[in-house]
Image (cartoon, rainbow, N blue to C red):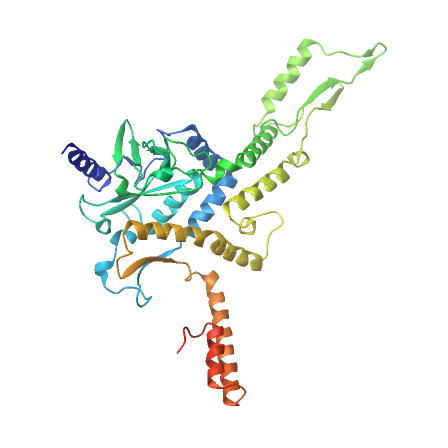
Length: 417
């Protein structure tokens, strides 16, 4: 009885995220903050990388925008066409929750996954009802979720693993029922007994590249903040005894003049003095001479490779042709976005238990312009093949059996008579 009461309490606690219990309003919009109550220092560092390193945020933003262009549909398994019976329509796929559109939801959940290596999608449905009757769907900030696997047995001996999820909101913590949560994660190489289900972000394995970029920005910023160069002003004047040494009064006067000119508009960028001065440079006055820009580009390329994002899709000094960009976008979808989306769609079908239904959830990117030309090329090629085979049949070069066999070989007809 106690377990049932606890389960009911957790279920009703979930409704704190519905329209009657919104989070705090900031400005003119509602949003879920992704700061505070970070579960680990590593999560906070990943968030810091995203918010402070332009190269990291550019890659993640590109992937999130590309992912959000997915078209979600309910498809009939028998016809392969979009299901017309709207009873089977899972409404949260079109309208996830009361403050996010479908596109916003897809972008945010992908951003969370890319930053933290974990993605938590919470489905809000009444206790005892199937998940298909979900009233809302939220993507939860991974840095506010604590995951535990309390069973002592190794994971490969657990047929139905017990996973405990806790969501921190302000000073309170809420237990999230495992069946209400879709947990997607990246690979993990340091699996531990108390938590063997959380993934690790791809950024965690690119720490050297990220730190190099951060150091390059800091070095360039130091040069800019210090008017581009560091050096020593010395007295170049001489008399019969040799070099004249500046006295303390002259040194202080020069220091005051330099300090007064720093970073202020309208200040004349020179010192007029009766002293004969000489300048001894102590630092590099051009960041390019330090190789900082080249280092940043090299490390950015490493990050692009790790994230599966072609470098041609980003702005560069050398530029890129339209044709290169077009094929780069194709590679992004075919090699990265679509495989990742297939995993995501598979998780939705599993959660909504579509295996026993006559329909299933499908995600598609074929409506994008980048694929339209490819579809036209395939269609033109198939038309040419069909026309050539028909002409060969008409003039007696092949018989009907050979005609059908060639159509099968090119995939124009399936099966055998």
